[in-house]
Amino acid sequence: KNEVEQSPQNLTAQEGEFITINCSYSVGISALHWLQQHPGGGIVSLFMLSSGKKKHGRLIATINIQEKHSSLHITASHPRDSAVYICAVDSGGGADGLTFGKGTHLIIQP
Amino acid sequence: DAGITQSPRHKVTETGTPVTLRCHQTENHRYMYWYRQDPGHGLRLIHYSYGVKDTDKGEVSDGYSVSRSKTEDFLLTLESATSSQTSVYFCAISGGSGRNYEQYFGPGTRLTVT
View 1 (cartoon, chains in turn purple, red):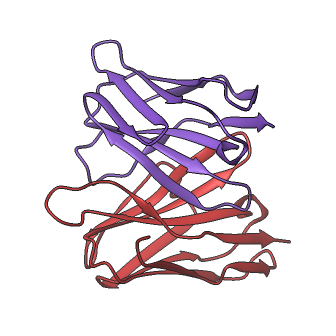
View 2 (cartoon, rainbow over the protein chains, first blue to last red; view 1 turned 120 degrees about the vertical axis):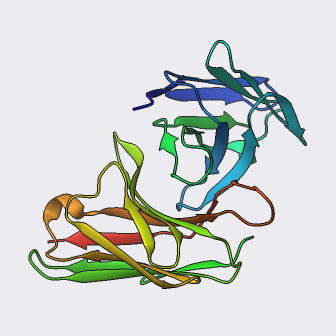
């Protein structure tokens, strides 16, 4: 069973700061997902990656397969980025469901 | 956003009663999943389906059954609800065009078992 650890569990920062959320896992994977969940519950997929780096707007996700580690970065953070960010791994080749970290609760203060 | 709906969105039921949650998709995605989300545990996989009538168990499947008779519908049944099944339940889909395994989540169902 893949163990997925996220750090930090909670993070409070000021608007404009550069944010980094880390994710590590214990067993080799076929892909890693970053998800966002706002208060009220909806879950949105931000990234799915299996190697290298992806960028979407102010969000950047990187993965190091050899070190079993991924990071999610937010540049020029804004209060609307306040949410829970969840790392999840696919260990089964795409169809078997995900294993999730417990999430990082991010608060960006104006 | 992917077309995924869940019904009901909220339900309160008594211990021992059967409960069925429905997930409906309009995206023709092959794979469908049921997860539950609990404080301190995060999201965990209950059951998943890789096609019509093809389902398999996830990490926390005890006390749950599923059925998929059509591509668009995936039902989760609690045969006899218990208080430990109080949770928020999310359906997800994947497997759209090509080998795209990005997962798209439904809005969730908040279930309270009293």
